[in-house]
Length: 588
Image (cartoon, rainbow, N blue to C red):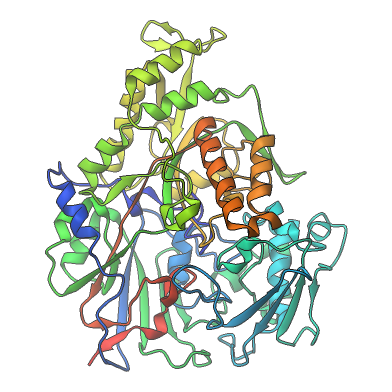
């Protein structure tokens, strides 16, 4: 859901992008999966030359929103469109730990509860202005000011001294941000109520890792930032490229940022254009683009394409089924659970999970490149992932038994609620390529088999932007929905599932969840064994409560022109989860 590779951190994944779109029946899933695991994460390293244009095809069945702000955007599509120019302050190693190689360095002092950030000299915006301390403070102001209605704000940021007071309108500045050399200096000292182990990772949501050009945006009211031309039409970046031309919602042309701090990019131009998912395989086979993600259900159509290198990763992502049990309260900036909500019955939610034939769907439609996941913590997070977690494997007998015991009796074809009232469940799902409809209809038929009258909200699949607009505004016509997250490179789930997280679109709130969230992100969590234990407890709790049921994840395969070199998806060779485009060039 979300916006996406959220930008590196939060992100919404379109179902059409990673999975659930496909071709015919597959009888070689095991072989394909074995082969997929051997994909390289980088193109072969070769000597490169200066010059050339790279065309990137971006699969989406809807125009991109074009919100070029890491605070205000919540869409992975925008993150991909912005990739040539967008960088965060910190680079990471291959285990997502912050290094000193990025635009800024980070030093944590656990005893003093401070973080010192030093922006490197020469890190400049695309208009030539040095990135300064005020740009970092301003990013925090955008994040926390109520007038921006920032979707990324949650109470986990309130670990910073004074941030809550600023967010609540009780203070005009954020007391926890110190700029010892002034606004135009390059050093920022952050003062926290406590520091925690998340802060050592890039993409954590306790210490923000983005800046915004204060000198350029300061005259725009916070309430108008999201819609302003300075964000949508002529944004500034300090990455390798700057925007040369935008065709709103359709394409962006990038040219080199002559002030780029890492050096001169090798390419002369990058053009990113929207492509319909239904045209994706043909576009790859005809070499219409130099870089393009493979839709996994179309893998069989493109796997033999010549003159391309297929590079791949298993992204920090997953799809899930969530149940609406409350609403968002703008006044308190909190989720409010409704105990009387239709879907606020654990037995009903569990039965719906057991009725989903996820393995069969993934095997048939994705050639073994998509796989069911057992928890809401990706396996890439190592010890934090509970490999023994009990997931919702397909079991219609168990689903029926759970509903029977919970009082969901059958009255004719359909089950009724325990209070005797009729039960109709409206599911929302995003539109995608030609296989999206039959896949969602398959799940609906599975639920029909256990006597649940499930139907499509609005009577059809919903376009991406409208889908998330409905969820964010708690559309009363939606009882459950299928979405996806592109996660930060830090495992804490608080951004998505806490009481104050707008991304918690299920709107569930429990004392136990609040407790576990606090524990796994506390100062005690510097003890690795303790933190692992709390992560496992949280996964077990979430699987049992079933407010959000994990579905699947996929290999993310990219077809890259074999004349290109320097394209890598390794964490240490990316920034903001995107390739370092200044390294990409044509081989000699």
